Image (tube, rainbow, N blue to C red; front, side):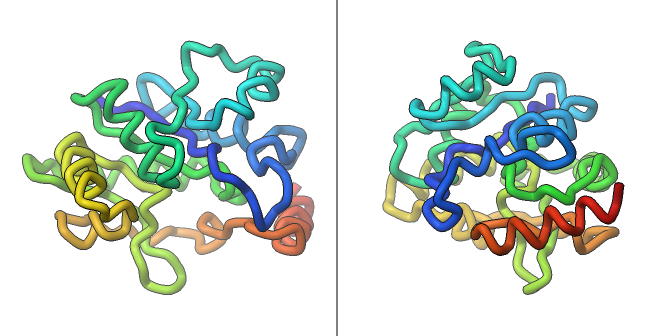
Length: 200
């Protein structure tokens, strides 16, 4: 069972605005990311903060598909733990909304690798980024890996990357490096939007 999770609950302090509501090719990043995941998962949920619920509803999201960070102060780990609580038996295909150049081919490549590495142990299937690090926010976490994350969070180790260092990791080299380009500042966003426009 594979469920989808759009990570859109960050504070976006460097961007100075809600990244999930930024638009590229006519869509908000929240909607665009959900559309990428929906063909590859049984359900898609949106991780967000309570202050972002209004704008998400205006985009057509159903509140039944909202997952509020639990607890709200732990960054991405909060979203992953909320997903695990929603369905502790599913594996979760997790994607941050700030990969605006990602395509369905990226999700397909990740899922294919996940399916080709069946595991009964704590395992995460994720892309390797340009710095040769695993990318925990564009990844598939199986239920055992999420249980391990919860254990680490309870012990004060809240970074998902720490959990990746303690479990089985299947690294995927992306077919296109641009899939993992993300935007954290207004300048980075402007550059990525230019690249997106050139692709149209």
